[in-house]
Image (cartoon, rainbow, N blue to C red):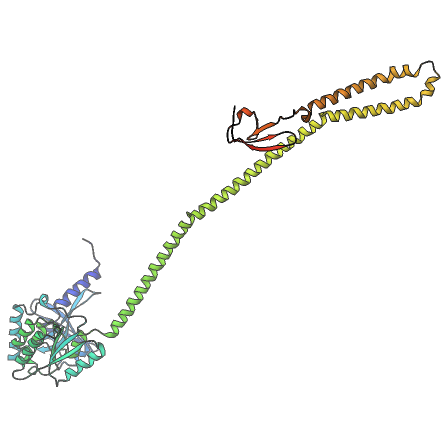
Amino acid sequence: MKPISVTQLNNQIKSILESHFQIVLVEGEVSKAVYHSSGHLYFTIKDEKSSLNCAMWRGNLSKLKFKLKPGEKVLVYGAINLYVPRGEYKLIAQSIEPSGIGALQLAYEQLKKELSQLGYFDEERKKPIPKFPKKIALVTSSTAAALQDMLRIANKRWRLTKFYLFNTLVQGEGAAEDIARKIRLADNFMFEDGSKFDLIIVGRGGGSKEDLWAFNERVVADAIFEAKTPVISAVGHEIDYLISDFVADRRAATPSNAIEIALPDSNEILMMIDEMINTINYKMQNIISKKEKQLLHLFEILKANSIDKKLLMKEEEIKILKNKFFNEIKAIFNIKQNQLDFLKNEFNSLSPQNRIKKEEKEIEILKNKLNNIMENIFYLKEKSISFKDLFDRSYLGVVNKKESEIKALKNAFLALNPKKREKDGFAQIIKDGKKVSLNEIKKDDVFEVLNTEIKIKSKALDIKK
C-alpha cells in the first residue's frame, strides 16, 4: 500500500464528512458558549456520553433571536466542517432553536425520517447537475421577486441558457399539489426537436414556516424523487431546510444561489479558456523547442555523415596524397637529375671528343715548340749535327706518336657514334617505355619506332609471320 501524507488523509476525511453530512440537525445541551470579539460564536453541545464543538459565523449569528447560555437544550442546524491543519471537525451552525417542537415540526421530523428510510435522501440516487444546461424549467410563481432575482443573476452569469417558467402556487391551500403537478409537467415536457429540459429549479423566496410548508409535503417529495430530470430545490433563505431540499438532487440556499449552482460563470470560463490557451501555448512552445533541438541535433549528425562531408574529406585526403605523391616524384626526379648530371659530367670527362681536344692542345703545344726550334735552326747549322737528325731524334717521333693516338681516338669515336652504328632501314621498337623486339609486338599494340633523328608512334593493325 502506498503511504499518504497527513494532509492528504485529512483532506480525504474532510471531503467524506462534508459530502455525507451536508446538513444535520443535532440536539444537545449547551456546555460552553463564547461570543468572540470577531462577531463569531463558539460553543459546545453535549449529551450523556459525548460532546460536539460548534461555531456560528457572524452573518448567521446576527439573525439569532436569543443568547446561548450553558445548560440550555437546543436544536442546531448546520453542516460538518473539518479544519485540515489540526484535523479537528466542527458543526458549523446555520440556525439554532430552543428544543421542544410544535405540530408542524413533528410532522416534518416524521416525514423526514420516513423518506430517509425509503431512500429518498440517498446520495447514490442523486443525479448530477449538467455543467452547461441549454434549457432550464423554473417552477415558481410568476409574481415572486425570486423569479426576477434568478433571471437577473442568469443574465450576468451565462446568456446561452434559455429559461421556461411553469407558473405555480407556492403557498396556501393546494400549493403542494400544484407544485408537484408542475414538476411532473416540466419533467415530461418535450420540445419539437425531441429534446427535454436539462434542469428543473423549484423554489420561492423566504417566508415563515407556514408559508414554506408546501415544500415539506409528501406529494412534492414524491414528484421530485420520481423526476428523471435533475432538480434543484431553492426555497426560502439559507437557514430554511425543507423536505424538498433533502430529496432534490441539489439544495440551493436561495433562488439566486440556485442560478449560481446551475449556470457556469462566463467570466470564470473565459479565465479558464485563457489559462488553457496559455497552457497550450506554453506546452506547444516547449514541444517546438524540444523538436527544434532534436532537429538541430539530427541535422548536425546528418551534416557530419553527409555525402558532401565525406566527399570533402576524401578530397582533402586526395589533395594530401597528391601533394605527397608530387613531392616524392619531385624528390625522385631531383635524385635522378643529380645522377644524370653526374653521369653527364662523367661522360663529358671521358668522351673521345674531350680527349681529342686535349690531344689537339698538346699538339698545339708541340707545334709551338717546333716553331721555337725552327727559329734556332741557324744555330744548329753551324754545328756538325744536321737539323734532320736532330728533328728526327727529338721531335718527329713524338709528333708521329701523338698523331697516331689522335687517329685512333677519332676512329674509336666514329665507331661508337650512334649515328654511325645505325644501318639504313633499321630502328628501335619501344613499348611501354621498354625496348622490345619485333616478335613481341601483338595485334592492336601501340608502340614507338625511333632512331637518333625520328620517333614514330604506331599501332599494329595486322601481324603476319
